[in-house]
Length: 492
Image (cartoon, rainbow, N blue to C red; front, side, top):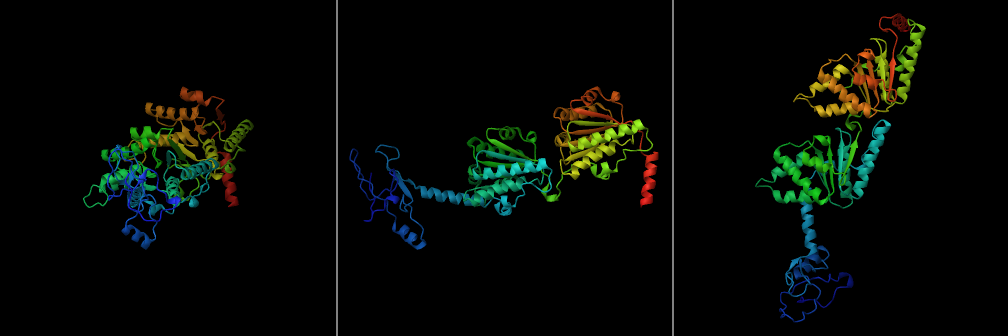
């Protein structure tokens, strides 16, 4: 092919242009077909380029010598023969300009303080199982930041640390000199809407393409965006493009997968691409080490401990006292190792609610696991309220929260309204916990023969349940309570 007009001093070997990229010298006469083209000479920078390089100290591209374009070294007759194309150095410049413009819309400036170094991998006073869960989530995110491959879906309740970890991934990549874009979903959609404006510097098509193709995209708070058809369509287009090309993507959400739009759900459920991290930790912002549902009424029973329970009631017969001591010990054993179901049955005031609350308080005091303590009629009221359009929590999420809680204490089973709906909900709840062998404490004043057969058969399953019948009469107003009250007055 034609050679360029060159200077006498040839570049050293390290600057030898690639064999298939040569500069075109527009002053070189074209050769006739069949002639052997002269050997290409090293590309020569223009005088303006050389002066700029000398003034700024910037290195001249060894491929194009600053001209900005090259001609592929291809045989005569090839469609690319004699056609100038942009040099790779110009491609890099365009990429850098594009990434700078894209980064300008990102939210890195607001989360630049959220780094792995500032994250508490074990949380703050979490029970061991949740501390381990948070530590594993932290380690998974650190590993992803070192080598982003596939997608990372981080789920969890508000304030559990998922945004911190997602932002830390983006900040770690930026610290490594790599490209990462962090955006909350509402902000992303706002930028796309604004791109339609006539005064917007970055056109919509350009902005959307940059979002689709950025090397690492971190999207925070999926589900917080306005669920208009337009927003759903743009989000699907964005994520579907990245899904098809397997581009590294991090997504955080407090939604369950089942609550998401079907097209997104199918892609986020792809275990071949998506690694799912579910964080069980409490809300960091509250400073509370133990998380309790707003349904739980355990705070009303904070004084009910094993130490305050009278298992040696003087008003009981020897047989009744022995029975009460045995039930008391069963409850202590269950509190040490919560496993399966514990059923406490007896008349009103016999101490079953006290013992159930003592088990729950023991878990809280030792920071072992989260507990939900709820009276059954109140539980059903909460579920009914979740159907309201004004409810802050959907029914599905509320029900899922109850059935999956690490330790569930259901107080006063049998006092609820026995409607078909109530029976169905209780069956769904307790059947799930029975099959999953989740620790559950149930108190009831009904004889086991009066309980619905589906529940009675589970309660009497000795392989998974411990049924403890309390024979003692009610404590309130008994001689034992009166004596204890007089003792407190004398000591007070």
